[in-house]
Each structure stands twice: as C-alpha cells, then as structure tokens.
Image 1 (tube, rainbow, N blue to C red):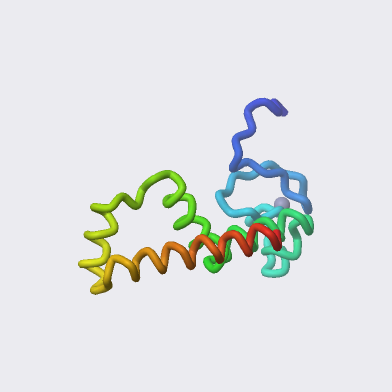
Image 2: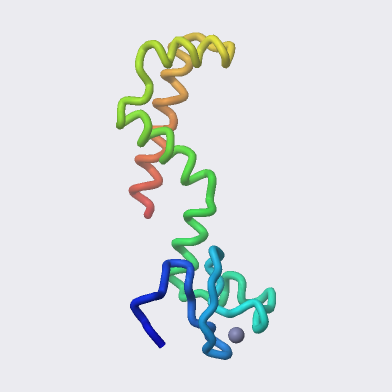
Length: 110
Ligand SMILES: [Zn+2]
C-alpha cells in the first residue's frame, strides 16, 4: 500500500486493519465501529487533546484572546460591538480582559 498517499483524513482501522477515510477522530472503520470506540478508543493523549479541542470553555477565551493579540479589536470595532451588544465600550473591554485572564489561567493549567 502506498503510504505516501495517505491524507490527514485517512486512518488505519485498529480492528480489521483496513484503510478508511474520515474527518472524525475515530480509530476504527465504519464497519467495525461501536459507540465505545468514539473517544476511549483513542490514545490517552489524543483523547485529551480532542476533548480540549471540543471544550468551548477553553477554545472561546483562546479565540477571543488570539483575536485581541492579532489586533482585531480596534477602537472602531469596539465601538461597533458596544453598540450592537448594548454595552458601554468599557464593558466590552472588560469582557476582553476577562477572556484574556481566563485564557492565561487555562494556559497555566494545560
Ligand atoms: Zn475495520
């Protein structure tokens, strides 16, 4: 089998050994699949990484803080956001600051 042709979505089934394609992080093909293969079937580290990726309470602060760090929240953007969120601009800044603090805490615990 030509190994070089495998894409990131190609996996080798851990039960029957066939090669299958899936966007899901599931270690067995659809024919071998049972519910118990969903996450516990993954290696511990992979499962942990997958669960962190799925966790909105981790990824949302991260997203906000990265957007902030990349300069997405200009004065004009903050003003527009405040208006559409029915908040004062300092309240939008407070939310951004809370996201930053939250993300710092998450990074410390990762
Ligand atoms: Zn299989």
